[in-house]
Length: 326
Image (cartoon, rainbow, N blue to C red; front, side, top):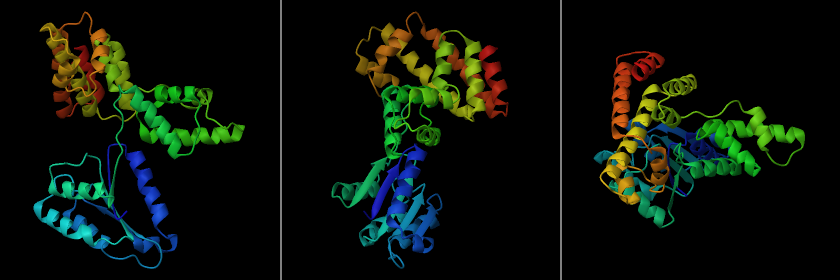
């Protein structure tokens, strides 16, 4: 398939897909001349990718042109779009052009439309690699099962649950821990990875920003700060935590306000709150029983104080403590 469009925020799965193409397409003896790794954030390298994709491979095997942060389906300038449209029909079957971007392709762009037309005709391929939301238990289960399948590993059902509890949606860590667990299973002669092995070999339980929000809603700032410290110690960016908490609390606020007005249609509430899965509203209703919109407004105000402190250069731990405990 001469062109593959690969997108999504699951960087570990995306990298595995890229490596699979490289391993299957390239002759190792000619890899140094037939593999190009380019960065599409530089327009010159984006143009170079199109030129190299049209060049037949040297020696045996195929040519692979990897363009990270590809602009062709995400904010593509007119001049670059013209080059892309003029090039896609001239790429030989002996070339694999991999267009990668963490963002979903913009379906309004003519370059995206041209490429998706080829996808429908079987002349190109589109693969998405999206991480499940931290509240999406079914999506996290699919992530664990898919990653294990890609690594050709067998998991006991309870081991899947244990991995979700221990790792959550951290795809890169999941892959690393599964490989460690596979070595352990091999050394013990077990055909499957067990829940006992997961619990004994993987430290701690996953912490995510939504758990922090739950603690704040419950009026337990001490627990919220402890969870925040765990997130920050694990390298989670402070502003990303603030963004996640803000989105979570705004969703709660919408649900409370609409229910106050007598709205009962979960689809209407989900749309207004920006929640993709209307079924989640049932869970939120139970969680919000006895809570007032004023509580959510107060939390949003405190988060604004935290964000302001972070942007003024405060240490993340201090910013959260001052904003949430003050």
